[in-house]
Length: 317
Ligand SMILES: [Zn+2]
Image 1 (cartoon, rainbow, N blue to C red):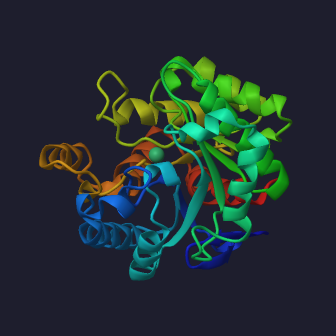
Image 2: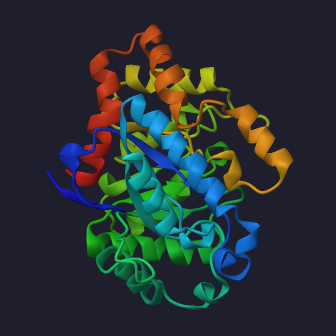
């Protein structure tokens, strides 16, 4: 039992219920909503996101982890409005995505960790809304020097606050391994680490290696199809099943990395996203869970992936 901060206040992990482990209400860039707010359709995002969350609430989801950081234009007031309008419990993040601010590249991780800790302990941007997870990101080509500084800052924040870490990776290049190496060097308990986007590839040796290290895995890009050459949703579901068969049903979580079409800017991109996933946050309950059961997953397995694992990840073991 533990208490986790959501945008609408602290929630007991026992009340998390069916949880989607990696999603977004809206993503853009640092400073955009202050300087060029007209570029962002805030009302449109709010309307579509509230409807999308209500729809997935109907399918049983009770908690969403929104891992948008400030360099993704995180708007915690908007997220709170969507949570209040839909009844969804939404956890928000501190940390950094890929666009590390230039000045962060010139300082020690110890100069950054207190910024993250303040967002966990006091709240974000004076709202009193507290972060419940630490997000950190690396992608194709490996961890840049700037990303390494914030990764180490995330590690130190985790150790100081007890709040878990959720990462963005590029699994075809096994970027999770590089993140784990640095987090281990920092002395982070790998039970408090979730390696995300681990279903953009089907390399089981890589995934089992990570699981054997003791991290949690996020199979959190569904249905896929936006990045050419990455697995389709059936292949992604086969990987989930293989990991369950390998005895890791207690260490994996499912999510979409979804945001509503209006969270994007050009009409064409919005259309492409609508086409890529017409089910939004409902894709997993509507398609993935029934398919996993066809493959042989038990109701107990499904409950582990969707309810017990997110709860245990936040509680720490
Ligand atoms: Zn994401």
